Image (cartoon, rainbow, N blue to C red; front, side):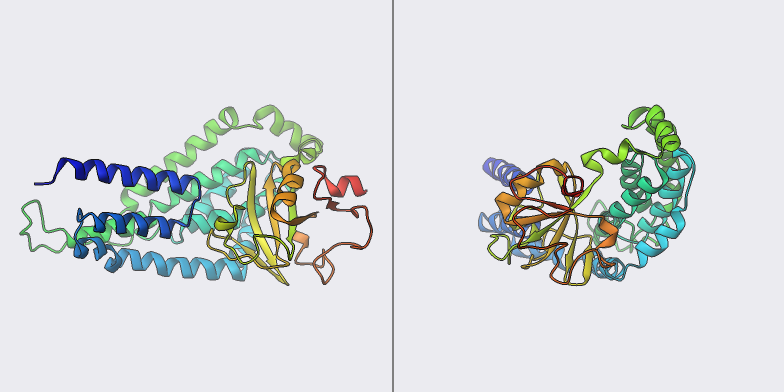
Length: 355
């Protein structure tokens, strides 16, 4: 029978691991393996049980899906086809339908995280072009990917992990010889109705519950979105990593650039390649251009702290000659920031100030 201290020890380990994950102390793999090592060291879990998860077929399948998702993301295939599917809807409701249905379908076969990460800049540009509030499509994007993942066995990693546990299950008495299995679309019997219900609910309730509701949406559709385009959170800011920056050679999570308050790292441009869906383990190099969205008025402080040179430009122009060969957009010898550039100790919009 287990000792009383073992339960408290396990709770303490899990609590510390959870707090460390929230604070990005280290990568999730390091923290999880560290927690497992401490459980093994205390002899609460024996070695066969502790290492059993690494042979789980569901876990290995998840790893393969990440490779597939990374390939689709890096080739730009998802970017191209989703841009074609979104079209030019005239109302917020039709825009949400055009967004949520294909995203839910794609998420049924790919991991949710890279799908959402790739779609964020696409949806931001799309919402600005059709003059609807971005707030009305970002949450539907996230929820549609979650709901779509419940429709198939490979839609989300938890389904695959549970499948591995189901195959190893020997019944309540531990002696059953029946082989349990689950088909690719077996979850669709429940997942598809749930996804349809969730999408319907978002169509009905989003105008009342999400920012940029009915009045703002109608104003944006009629007035060209001029007021919405002037808000700082609608901008995407690029910041080039300098040679003396402490973030050079570190991962995104290890450098502290992942958990910035109010800023979200959208993508990274390395030489002529735009890398979307940047994960926490992505290693930064000198000269990388990091694209952020969110509270861009704080970009000046971030640049000063992390050794970045901020640049404001259209996100979709960086792959089309938006910068010089050295990654800049102007004369570096000028003492004042050129058009489109924010000085490291400034917090304004470089493009507006330079103009």
